[in-house]
Length: 429
Image (cartoon, rainbow, N blue to C red; front, side, top):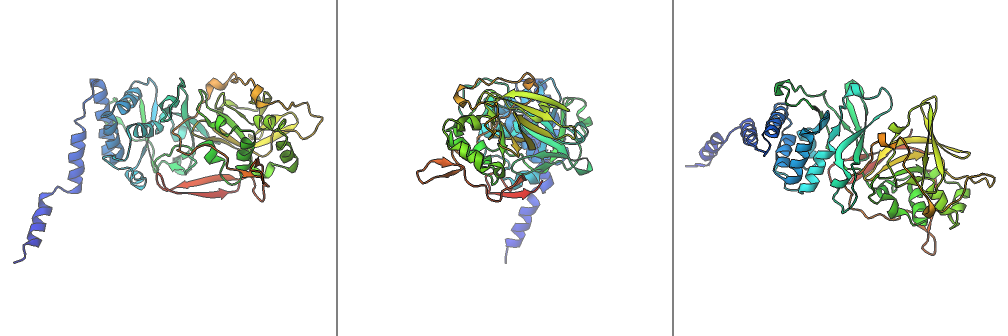
């Protein structure tokens, strides 16, 4: 007699159904105890809401945070923030697609905590709180000092995220490695009895990825000439290193590098000033700092002052002397700063211009007076070492290559999974 079918049936009958397994796991998780009794109550209410809405992986991640020192500090800070916080919660499917599943064996304590901090925004960021046109800049709970790289920097600067309105009252989180979209409005927290009064919970369809390094961004077709220019003057590593305020860089698209500009780049006395006209390592300046129609003046690494001009049609430009470059995409968040794409190189080739050709090493950049109202940007390095992504001549010296057919474009990168390959797709503006 074959007993296998009988044994299999008995085995299946003895196991709880999938829903029962989820319920048992939730009940075990609901036993979490923190030294702070009020925080324990807060976390119980939070995981109950997440469980009730089928957001089981994030619920389990909250429990995981509570069991490690860095995670407990993150949860405690969220609870005691004294301000409204928006929690972006990826769906279970989004976590599975990213390879992040309980019991989170692949997550280091620091990396896992920082992933949670990246999804926790300061302030209320729902559809009706976003601007009708353009985008909003939200500060996350991820601080510069929480970075995995070693640093003595003491700052309260936070990684920023770009959010904008989508269709059907959706919120879109605009990222280098692809966009995340809310699949419904904020969760109903009334069942928590007011315990979660400082939270807005917004489910999203992707796990947010950490922004890339500057060197990674400048390896994108259409932006590589700036990488070569930084290499020519030996500034590739300096610009993207971790600083107190991050960095701001205006990157001309490859098609804007004329032969006259390339001739300047081979002059060792002029090249540093040209490159220094495009960046500062003193602060991360996002577009929320300038509103208009108005103008906004700031210092850059070369010692020059550039002006950001907000036009009546809502577009923005960067002005240096007689050069006016249109900002064709603003607020590209990087792992330690922000990038704005422009359509001209900020350097006059007219010898009558009064613009000086100062060396970047003599610059005395300062933070603009309104920069305190902006978010500074930093997050986990991607592990790649800064370096030249440009070309070299016969002697091995970095040079600016021909731009070819590259044109001003708005780029997007589809992120498949954490650690997966990326696919670059170009969408013409």
